[in-house]
Amino acid sequence: MKQKDLTKGPVFQTMFVYALPMICGNILQQGYNIADTWVVGNFIGTGALGAVGSAFALMTFLTSVLLGLCMGSGVVFSRCFGRKDAQGLKCSICASFVLTAAVSFVLTAGSLLLTDYIITWMNIPDAVRDITKDYLELIFWGIPAVALYNFFAAYLKSIGNSVVPLVFLGISTVLNISLDILFVVCLNRGTSGAAAATVIAQYISGIGIGFYVLMKRQEAASAFLHFRISKSSLGEIAGYSVLTCMQQSVMNLGILMVQGLVNSFGTDIMAAFAAAVKIEAFTYMPAQEYANAFSTFTAQNAGAGSRKRIREGIRCAFMTSAAYCLTASAVIWIFAERLMRLFVRADETAIIKEGVRYLHIVGPFYCGIGCLFLFYALYRAAGRPGMSVVLTAVSLGTRVGLSYMLAAVWTAGVCGIWWSIPIGWGLADLTGAVYYKKSGLAGEKGQL
Image (cartoon, rainbow, N blue to C red; front, top):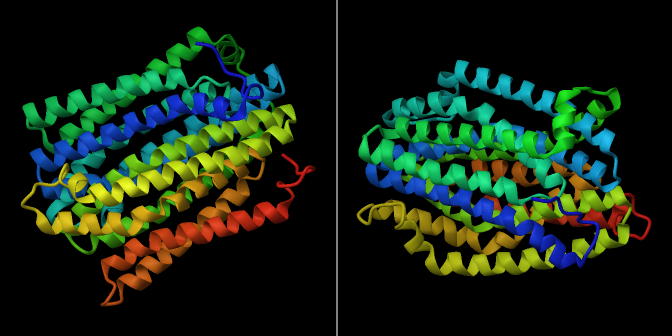
C-alpha cells in the first residue's frame, strides 16, 4: 500500500480520503470498547462494569503519554516527508523509537509497582477493589504493546498511509472481542479474562504492524539497520513529542481526577458514567481522528511551504467537523436511553437514568470538543505544541475545578460534574480562537 502525498490534490477530498481509514479504525476501537462494556456489564455485573470503567480511565491516561509521544513524532515525520528529507526522517525514526521505548518501560514498571497506591488514589470502593486490582495487574502488561503499535502507526500515517494501521487495528479488535467472549462468557474468568483478552490482542497488533513496516518500508528498515541518532533530530523529536505528551497526559490526568470524584458517589454512578463515557467516545471520537488527519495534512504542507493550502484546509476542517458534531449531538439526544440499555440491564433503572442525564447535558455540545480537537491538531502541526498544552490546561482546569466545586453544592451534586465538561470545552475554544487571530497564523505571512 502506497503512501499519500497530502500536499497535492483537492483539499476536502485529499483530507477526507486520508482520514476515512483513521475514522474507521477509531470506530473499530470504540466498537471493541462497547463490546467489552457489554460483556462485562451483562455477564459479570454492575460492580465489574464500574471497576473496568475506572480502569479504562486510568489506562487512557497512561497510554495517552505514549500516544502523545507518537503524535508529536508523527508531526516531525510528516514535516520531513513534506520537504523530501529522507535522511532526516531516518534519524527522527531512531530518536523517536528510543524515547518511546524508554517511556514505555518506565510506565509499565511504575504501574505494576504502584498498583495498590493507584487504586487508593482513585477512590475505588472496597466492594470492587479486588476485581479492579486483578484487572489492572494484567492490563498494565499491555503498555509496551500499545507503544509498539502507536509508534509504527504514527510513522505510517505521517507518510500518508492510514490504511495499514486500520488493518492491524481491525485484526486486534476482532481478536479482542472473540477472546472476551471465550474468557468471560465461556470460561467464566471474570475481569481477569477481559484483561487477558485485551493484552493478547494488543501484542499481536503491535508486533504485526512492526513486522509489516520493517518488511515493506525500506527507509524504516534502513533506519533500524543503520541505527543513528543525531543531536538535532533528538532535540526536534523531544521538542514536539514532550509537549504533545504533556498535552495528552494533562488532558487525561484531568479526566482521571474527575473519575476519582465520580467514584466517590458510589457504584451506581460509577457504572452510569462508565457506560455513558463509552457511548460518547464512540460518538465524538471520529472527530478526533479527523483532527489527527488534519494535523498530518497541515504538517506535510508546512514542510512543503504551502501556507495557502493550509489555510484552505483549516476552513474545510472546521466546517466538516461542525457538521458531523451537530449530527452526532442530535443522535445522542434522541437515542440516549436506548443506548444506555445496550450496556445496563433494564432493571437497573437508577443507572440508566443517570447515564441519560449525563448524555443529555454533555451531548448537545459536541461541537465544542470537535473544535478543540482541531485547535490541538493545528497548533501541534504548526510548530506550536505548547499552545495545545495551554488549551488543555484551560479545558481540564475548568472541568476539574468546577467539578469539585459544584459537586460539593447540595443542589448540583453529580450533575455539576457533568455541566463542567462543556463549559471547559467552550472556554478552551475561545482561547484557541483568540490566539489564532492574534498569533499571525491567520495571515498571509503566518509562520507554519
